[in-house]
Image 1: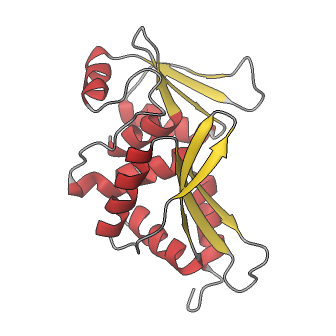
Image 2 (image 1 turned 135 degrees about the vertical axis):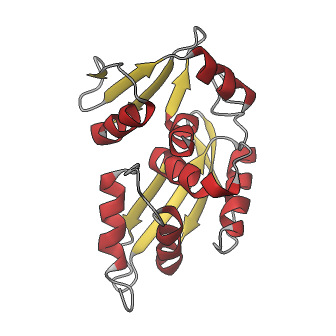
Length: 197
């Protein structure tokens, strides 16, 4: 469930009544989460945004556990990086990446175009994420601050070669198939341009 926790922390929300919601354009991810949780709740199309899918569920124990981890209603600015056992840290980070990470190509760099990034509105979360990635073998990175219309966002960015390292960390073992297919395939496309790729 570490992957699911990463998704909820980044892309989910908890109502004051204790309902947990995930809203994503990638319906396949929600289907995987639903299966992993053994949930009978339906995945529905958003009434307000075309191409957006919603998965609502509520379990009293899960909400209680999330609360202890600092995942509360209106969490985005104050969420803390939870204490994740080392055996599950990579799965958690993959969930965080599928929620608030990006993999893309820098068109100005033809030979090494692959780029990745993480963003968060919580400075505490992004600092601890960067520290956790360093423990897993990623190089130290500066954290960039971006002003948005809703406040401030914090960002970590990785170059082409380091994005390949991130791929190996996050997709090291996928027996449960919990990952976003679209981002995974873009990684594979970018890695082909690496020497020896």
